[in-house]
Length: 465
Image 1: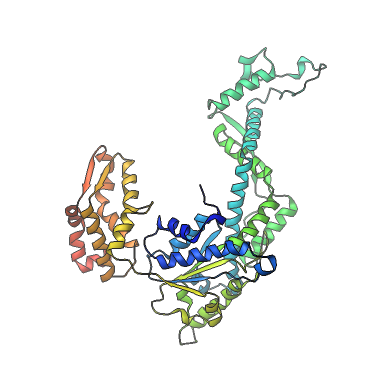
Image 2: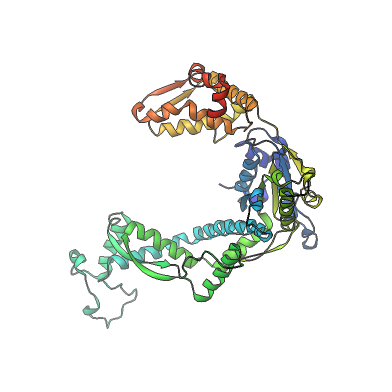
């Protein structure tokens, strides 16, 4: 069950993040306070509420220490719309400043999907009832749907029985329909073919509009589609099982008010949205003001209005970015936060340095989180009826090797564990279908046998680990 946004205290937020992320208490504390401040802001008087700006955060630390995961888990925890973008993509050839606004449009699309799914769940019961009736109409094309309040003037000619329902001859249409309803509910008609109507897009794929960005093209096509009433219908033969999904989705779409979805989604983006800007250190300007550094500074100036607060046009309406929470992250190996332009620095008042991971942290990452790596591999191989049994010494040795390789080559943090675990269990994974029913102990000796030679050979380590 999802924790409600208003009920989360900073300590509870940190406790929830602890279930998935090891260490980094400073960063967890910073994001917990930023999140709680959004709840506090909602309780302020209207005239003061708009004056309180979000406390955007810059996370500083090497790759693989949990920067992205903290922001992603935070969004999942609160049900907030979340999008991750790479700052470097805006420096690519062909991009222009206004394309930076695409991050907001993407966030709105995520929010629309979330809200639509929630509202569809509310009407699912009614949609399922409508779907069942439509499936019965398709299965019984020769049996007229009975009138719930028949008049005495009806004649027997108003009931027509198809050849497919000869077993129900002499029975009322209602009786025949109810028999098919029961068979449908029992799953006895899933493989029977029926003909359904599916929506076909009214517009062909259009790739290029001269002088128009893809985002603007999306907005314009959306408006044209609304004016012309959407797509066309086409007939398709499929099984009852597939038809149920097609009709159910169509019925839920009919029952959900699209204007309400857009309104709720926009409000959720404006009040709760989180945009994670990764690799922001790659657009930090250096001493030189020529060539690529000018491009990097240009991207910073393009991002600045979005972070400061501006109106962005989307196909679902205008969105105010003033209270979206921005979390930026970067390794800052060859630059520092002060290399960012002063205006952008000022919009990220909270700076948190994440710590590099050591062997002790790797032991916890392998064993403690709900999605612990060892648990993932054990469950994967359990599907092949193979049981893995890791002993403590093996886990300690794996962690030591990961830390050692990180110190001698590029430090990629916890991601090194994925590389090492894959190599360690490669043969077992490959031969798993032939090992069904066996329990395989993973000991320190097995770890050294599989990885020892590679770790000792520095050249092999660089290429394989």
